[in-house]
Length: 126
Image (cartoon, rainbow, N blue to C red; front, side, top):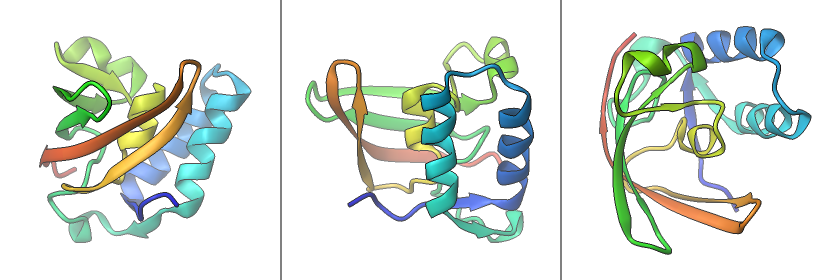
């Protein structure tokens, strides 16, 4: 069972807009749409600061390797703005959005299952 996720109305609108225009593989679009479908949608002002949103700097641990990374979750066209960026349309990016500190998620990759745990979120209130 996947964890509960929370997405702001602004992020939802931006993701839906980008999905309509992006040239992404069908399975990527489907995975992102599935995440959006199961999300609780809240007003931007009501999004808790410990929830991963577009523009958040998130520290997470890959559970099988125990490696820890800190990345800024962003839209594909913004990846050049941040040295530590990860696109929300990358498999791990779409897995991270909406999670909060302490939550874990597992998803299928080409190399098998991948699991991450959210360690910290630095909010970028939009």
